[in-house]
Each structure stands twice: as C-alpha cells, then as structure tokens.
Image 1 (tube, rainbow, N blue to C red):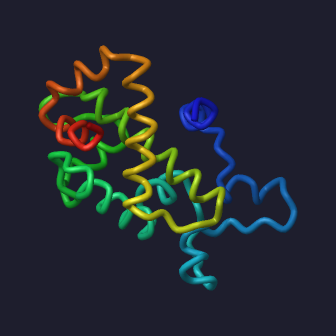
Image 2 (cartoon, one colour):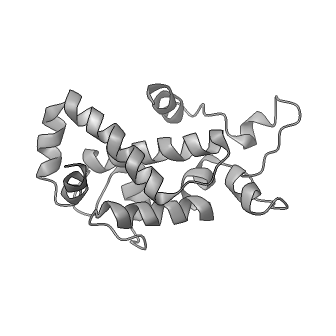
Length: 157
C-alpha cells in the first residue's frame, strides 16, 4: 500500500493510458469498462479509473452505503471529499485516509482484472484501517470524535 500511495501522489501509477506509450500489446481502454464491454472506447485515465468509471462509481456508492458514513453518493461535494477529504465545514484527514485505502482497493482489483465488489472493499478497508488504528491509536481517538467517520469505526468493533 505504501508503494501505491507514493505512486498515486507522484502521478506514477501504471495506468493503461500511460503504459500504452511504451509497452507493446497494451490497450489504453479502461480495465473495468473492458471487462463489462470489450468494445468500449473509454480510455483509462486516473480520474476515470478511480472516480468516473461506472464500475468504480457503483463500488463507491455501495462502499459509502455499507460503511454507514454520513455521506451521500449523490452529494455535490463528493469529489472534494473523495479526492481531498474536504467537507463543506473543514478538511477531514480521517476521510482522506479512508478514501485513500478505497482507491488502493480499486487499484488491486484493476491489477487482478476483477470487478470491485462493495462488500469486499468494505472488508479490505476495515482490515487495513484496523491495522493502521492499532499502530496509531491517536488516529482512532481522533476518528471516534468525527461525526462523519465514527459510524465506520463502529463496524470495526
């Protein structure tokens, strides 16, 4: 996950729209869209893969619903919450951490060439977040007092 976060923040992920320029027999189309519709013309960009892709969007909406966070999938501010952890009130590092882990799960599904399922993503995010919170108890203390994230922690136990 550390390598993914480094590559994500430094814009170095091996997305199809990038690898097509230097690897032979590579397709620049979205990995998830191609699974659903092999004739798709949708290119795989960073924004498309992690946010705009219908497959990712379905997984994101399911993740938000299953995690019981106080966010709506149709929230007009969802882009800012998802990418920057910024709610209308303030910046929320806790939300950013959760969505960074979510993006990591999407990336792993892309690498494995499988469609991401919301339930599997919630389980994986819970497991990774549980590990993070054991290592850094101060983060748990902060998240407990966060009205948006605290319902997700209740699922962790």
